[in-house]
Length: 122
Image (tube, rainbow, N blue to C red; front, side, top):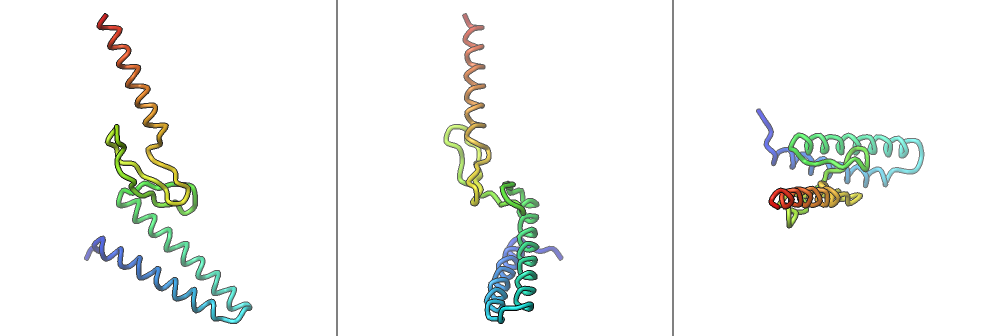
């Protein structure tokens, strides 16, 4: 049996809900060794959940930003107006992929090609 994307999304949402509940319960524990141990285990579980989300996103073809570890999942911000290429942006550092520099280089290369064509026509 294969899980659908909806099943995976529901699992991730449920896992996050469980993490929120655990944070609340840990907050109710008296300070001390048990409290610190529970906080450590919760932090480890959150990192594992985040790594699972990243692996899922990567397997689905999402772009990843390496500004943090685990990587941030980049989200679509639409298509470039002149080049009709989908652009992605990191919600954490706001890096864009492809970058504006990439599009500037394409424009520069296209201008150089057009200039050579004009020279050949003379």
